[in-house]
Image (cartoon, rainbow, N blue to C red; front, side, top):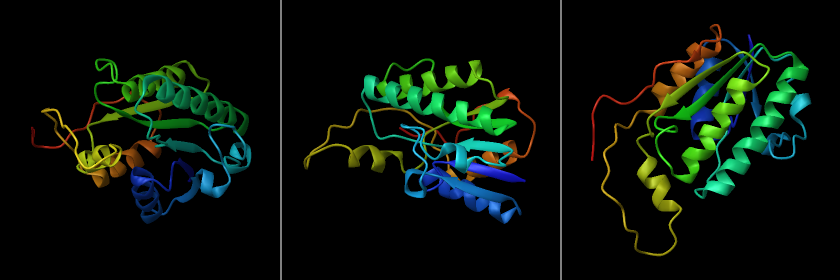
Length: 189
């Protein structure tokens, strides 16, 4: 099966590509560094030629609501339109647990992405996952300066490899709409 991984050079994307390749599927890595830009739409038609399924793990480091919503809305519209033109039969997207309950900017952007997918022209599956184990390190990297105030919060982090394996399973299956969320086995604070 020919499967495109959008954001295939990122943290989750690299693992999804490795998982699908190990299972014998032909993967197409869709990323700006490979000539496909979600924001402008350039290169998407070429990247999705002859692709049956798209796994969308594209990400943005924007934490503000306007920037996150703008990215996911623009990227989502361009990607879904290109998928429709290419005849893609299944769109699998990675989202985040709580996008419909948490008012943070990034979560609002992911919620907008889900809404576009659900209303879009391509049959879909959306997996909401807990934050990955390295989430704290990623979040701290975005904070300027030597001191960061970290709020106390509960989470149930999950291994990126586990999420990638589940996304690979979903990619080779039939569209299912929203599937059960995935989180790690232990709650942490």
